[in-house]
Image (cartoon, rainbow, N blue to C red; front, side):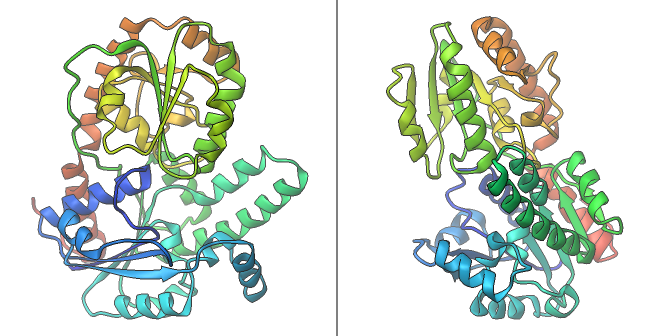
Length: 398
């Protein structure tokens, strides 16, 4: 397989959120199979990262750090004046230095360029001129849909701003999909959606790959439930805030909720006077928290892609209580693998009427289903096969 120039819009370590886990497991599995990868990570100017760590943990041939300014009102205003057609969240990943370095990396003969997420490609204006090498776009979400769904929950002025930015994201997203030699989505629903945006795109559903988790050796505590997720990612933040404000006050069953996750979770402080809530933030290992919990919560009402935390919970044998969208694309069956709740009343009733033995049985069923689909070695094999078949014109022989 040709060497890969792998571009990410964030440092992939530690793999403590869904996007980082997806990157970590696919890269580690690919390099373990002998694929040569040069990693280029676009990180904030003050981020403390160690390239040698990526070489050691991911097995990449090299790791290069590219710096971008920290986002803020001043930067957004400057970017808006310079280029009002580019979404502000994309503009912050574009500097002359980033563009020059990535153009140079993409110009190496015999490589394939992988954009790991839409923001990794923000510097590309015209793919035909900016990137001479074949392009693989690894789409973690349909990014524009997140903007438009978020707009539906906001007041008029904020809603208009989100839609305006969403239109800019959609133009770029459709352009990149159309220009890429291969677009690998993480779910069939994302594949269908991106086909609507870019009908000529070469699309393939390639699930997120994950590693097996330690099996539970003792029964969960029947009074413990868990939320895990990046706390400043809008679908997570808005869903958890809805749960804490609308559902949790109506739960009468004696339960303790543990909240774990990275990102800015300062907004949670307003809820921590409730003795039933335990906030642990970012932790080194989630294993003890999943193992002690009878349920994990996935209150997600907008967004796309694959809910990595729902996969992770299933790998621990801990069943989810979530919306249909919260487990979208994973293939879990609400009759056997997880508890589905959409409305406020459904969430309240699910928790007040919780049967721990049923939750345990659903967790076991979810584990069997997820392991069959999301094993990272299988996903890496499929990635190699399709890149060789669709880009290199060769068929991979395992």
